[in-house]
Image 1: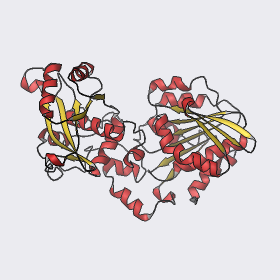
Image 2: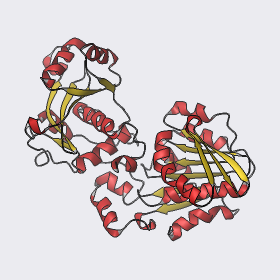
Image 3: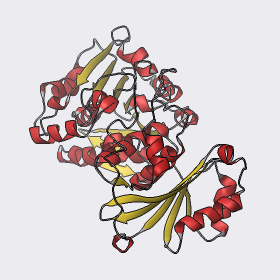
Image 4: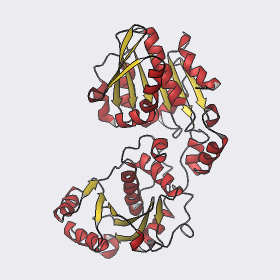
Length: 408
């Protein structure tokens, strides 16, 4: 395997006593994740024996997919004896007479800090650190009390108000951290053609972050590449659609939005929709009335699953009593928007011309620039929410790595 100069820095930085940590940020597909993972194992096996280490991702599933799936076979090729204990979320590695344990942790939300509390670690690697809560990251750091322990961070950029940017990127020198900024050109395995394809796949905020590797504020339209005048399609004849699903953003005081989706080859087409605004209509609907509306939207089509706003517990039970297979949607807004954007750009999600409420909402769906966080403005976003639920369900729900989800 060939490594770029910057990847070689990652592989050897721990030979110096100048640094206690390494922070790698930058564009997607820039080669930082694999080189950091490889370096972490080489450092641990050379310097320690009989110790525990932490490897953290937003979820353990994403950690296995994004890092370990490629890395563990490569370690075996180098002569390491690698054994993964999936039930225990641990990897045992033996090399040159040293045996160490690598514990896997998921930092999905604030409660995750309790999972790592109490561990004693000789080092920790945090993959996609900017996607984890600060409480989890700081708890992981606090666990590294063994003499000679070091910290390893990698991430793609978020906004400049993000705590990780403020505390680790801007303060790298005072924290004795080596900060390396990666671009796609730092990954020798990417051909110029593949790099150009990635550049064509993004626009706006996503382009600046995932292609240019900039920490920047989200501004303007969320789906700025989608033109409500030219992007919608004429849905194919129904006999050409092989499966049916419905996505639901539930509302009583707020509007309710249902999308009917048909599978067309490798794409899903939003063929029809239901949208009800109780404020405009002057009357709130019950769960049973909404269930009737959903069944009318379904017609005589066989609906294989209904993806519903996870907070709508009573409505979910109402649908299940009607014999429908219902799943609670993944409501991670940040990951959901990233995944949805890529599916729209790659035409895995198509929007029918008759979905007028969807087209009205997407034309004004903007980032909220007031709070310094990456959240869309909470207004006229109900079809946008049911779209996001559908995309996350289609991607498998666990999309803590944007790049991993869009490569599926």
